[in-house]
Amino acid sequence: MESKNIIIDFMEVLRGSLMLKDEVYCKEEMFYNQLTKLEELIPDEFKEEIGELRSLYIELEKEIKTTYMDYGYCLCESKEIQK
Image (cartoon, rainbow, N blue to C red; front, side):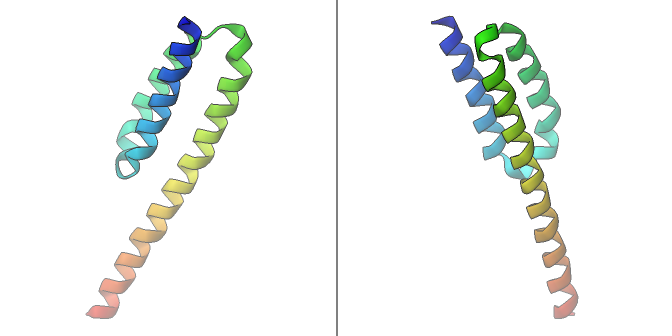
């Protein structure tokens, strides 16, 4: 039962980090600190799944940052056009 709760906690950390996309830079260090603590508690049989989840988070994070950088660039460009 404790293993199940740890996995649920892990997923909540992921979900919370992804929901706060606009604050992803601020939340990044907190996320990795929590993730490391959770990984230490997870039984060996779940280690591979958690590694996969961490990889997925990293890929999503890259997409989020790229999207925001593109969006910021578009905003700057549109302001230039309006001038």
